[in-house]
Image (cartoon, rainbow, N blue to C red; front, top):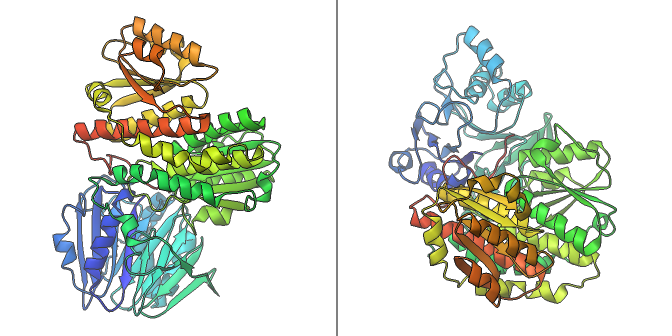
Length: 581
């Protein structure tokens, strides 16, 4: 949930770390801090965002340093709770992403031994434990190796000490990547801060500890030297820049046709994992937007192929696992979502075959499951998922296409063109209606029901307007009580088996005084006559209807949030990658 960056090399560390943390702010932006080393340990940390106040941090001296941008878990966002944390001697600095579950007992023990704590965080216990171990070992690597077995929970840590010219990195259930440069090396939560400096990367695995100097990287696991492959990352610097757009979210919405096209072309019968070629049943585990993508997949898979599918919240699966067999699919943009990883590990204990759909090469989930399918969305910076969601649907739709004899080849190969057309639509009237609302309902049926869930989530995430998605038939079972002239309803009403009953539902909502925004086929004059605002989309097959409707909902949330002056890319209280349970 937090972002960490480390540097050791020939250049001043602070400017590199500051720029790296700015690129990682989507992981957390409650507070930030940097520590560097020359002849002394320099420290600067504050509540707030580094993108708004980097001046002092950028001036710290030294060619070794670590930095952190925080999403608070233990202790409120303030200067004291910001990382890095320093030991009692003032010689060791540490940054941490994750949660130490047994920190209360560790803190009690350290206090009894005379340590002074300056924060409320779980992280600070680690640096004091390393301080003690260093006093015995006089070697930073050995000290970290001694301390890590005492920690319960998740961590990615970077540690520096005044007494040594190296950076120590370690991970367990939290991502950490090392970037390999020329006479310099980098460490970070992901590749976004590193890609402008190098395309060569090593992804640490759980239990790994790395000793990083200017010209050498040594990795150990259980105190034994290990070798990890060097990966070449095909992202460009331009992929992680706004490119003239006012927000990353809008840029990523406009990148969706290409993300869809690239992903569709990357998945075919020839490279489809064998476990997907004839499943008897499928269970999907995911969280947030990925859950909604999985629910759309359930509707489409059962409708097109007759293969039973069930959808489970990953956060519930670990603790309340349902009876599962055959194939379990985990969907996660980052490949580091803690709940999804835990669910897949649980599925493996039931001898289920496991498959991951993810966007990040080298992520933890790739090493957890039997097979992985990679999306081709490229880096996604905005907290609200857009192009990664479309890429997930592209993988899932292409899987269905392969399972049902490639009947949808032509449809999927040209689906990106329909999205390009939708991107040009004017949604001003719908935005003006939504921005004045306190509550919004989204209603649909079949695969358009999970689209309602996703559309409502986007509106909540970035505009802070309360929104809920419903299967349209469920409104009469309670939510009708909330309908009024101040409660807009967004109805997804496409041609198909449920069209007639959807029109009836819309008339029922209109009879209660609720203003209705309907998204339907542009030739549908009946629907346009009965609603307040009609958004007409091109007439396309079902798979493409799902994609074009999704893009309209994304744009509606985006423009509503912009009109309200909201922080689009960094919505309050949220972070991009949820690496803690």
